[in-house]
Image (cartoon, rainbow, N blue to C red; front, side):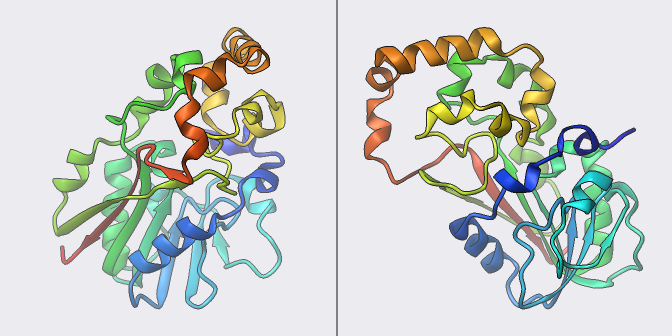
Length: 245
């Protein structure tokens, strides 16, 4: 199967820049791991500079956008990692697990090649409350079923901890919910092109026309006025850490 970002990843690095707060949470989750594998690494966001990192990415488009000096990258999939058992201290997968053909197989591979822990930044598909779904209900119908439920992680061998990762109002990593206090951003086709969900929905014009109309009339501000005072918010993003399997 052709990697999804071979089709939609053009210009991805312009809008998907690592957010400092999220980066800190990921760094803390990695603990004292020195040799780290980044699975579904994309353009290299959140790869720590103070550790030895090796990347795996199936999309040639994403690999081409990795900056000079980024970690060495292998073009491969999560389900078939080209490494020996226990070759790394830790493996991480950041907002990539929902793109895998078989996330259970991918997680088994991450545990196989890791000695200490795996770290997964993902989304809880049982979380509801993001206002954009009022305009585009297809998000919950098409995209969210791809994310593993939190129960799936709790069932893994080992010690599992799951933490909420709040999203700041000025989040620099332009994933789906990043613009929760900047609604006009979703009207920008370039912004949407860096969010894989929009490639699955199809025709979004009706919902976005409603959003544009509500922004112009002030209706959006009236409906979601409580957001303007918030610096960060829980939107369902979770950091899963598995150890001691």
